[in-house]
Length: 325
Image 1 (cartoon, rainbow, N blue to C red):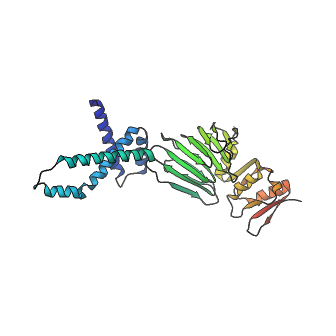
Image 2: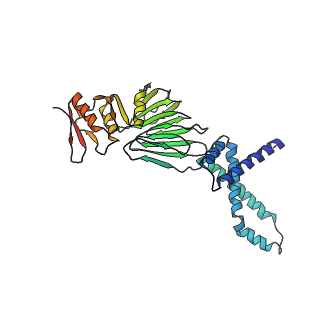
Image 3: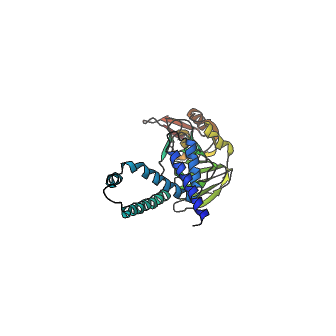
């Protein structure tokens, strides 16, 4: 190693050691932790330097209570010190460093998952740990994991709009049988009751990989939307209905020839009295109109006027829809 390389290595370790000390401080802020993650993700060499600095910092914190060192201090006037034990400690430290660095790289720091749940009856806005902004539709659940090198979100139920904070770490979103990857975009993802996945891209770029018997790959451009079927087949992208995408985060539902089962699934998110289809002949109906989220009365009125659909209360409290015989 040249003198210049050695100096660069020393400077990198000094910077990593400074980060270790700062992160251990009680007054370390969220902004500083975010800055550290950005610094760490920019270069794999920084991960190694940080792991070494963190390991030595932890080792130093335990030296005063180390029984071997206490015993050595008591015996120093009675017998000479030998270098073999010191060599053994150095080898053990090197082994721990290698294992620790490998663990950090393999597990991405083993980030703690954070679950976000909107159990209310209206959309909710949340700021995630990396600065990304998510709008959770009613009855929506997601889990986020943010590590040193990558960020990950799993949409477990419902619908979300995600504005991804710019970062060198890519964002990976799992929704049903599909994986979405992007850096710095705004998009919407919805898990439908039948297992299909609707994806709409408002800005940026988005790559989609699906799994299943018909796994496929697709790329969305701004102003496009598509559907991924349960089989993994990705339907062709189509133009995004912008007013529809903008409506639900504001508490309105805009339907444009939307199948009745999808209409009901979306309306049911905002009420404790669900609608159910009791007549299979109603399933093909396509509904258009704008409704306030949770306004069942307005939807039922439109269904009655347009298709003579009536509702009756079942024993379990649900409203069952049936067509006129």
